[in-house]
Length: 173
Image 1 (cartoon, rainbow, N blue to C red):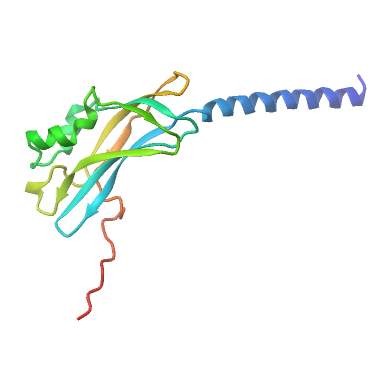
Image 2 (image 1 turned 90 degrees about the vertical axis):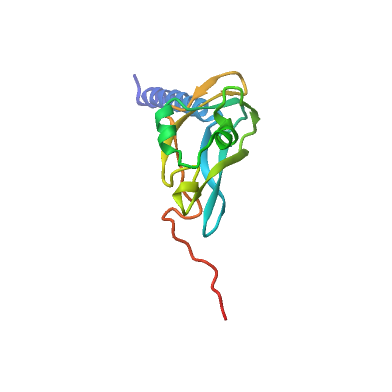
């Protein structure tokens, strides 16, 4: 084997390896990537209102998205004393089996109202800083099925400030 032939064989092998790796990584990123988070809708001195935001940060649309609570005990532990039957029906509707997001374009998000925390805990739907896992199940544009594994953990916290402290408006008299 001549040196030129050896260099050519090595170059061919490196090219085949690079092509294989490119296809592998392209297949892993050419999909929807759906996540969910609790986001502050509005905050004041007495209460914080939340939205549940579902986002597709992948490169293709996602279909038939379902949010599933597998650990009911963790969800119950996150609820505050103000979680009555009516507010549970309203703010936990996103976890109902019949609730499906039919299509979420890549780069798009959708949201729904998701309860409140109050400065006086007896009024709160959620316990502040509570966490519970949810699982997202969805399909890709071409019918592939995906499931968030490990589960997505939702935290009931002010998304405008990760420490809870923020600068307020300065009142001048």
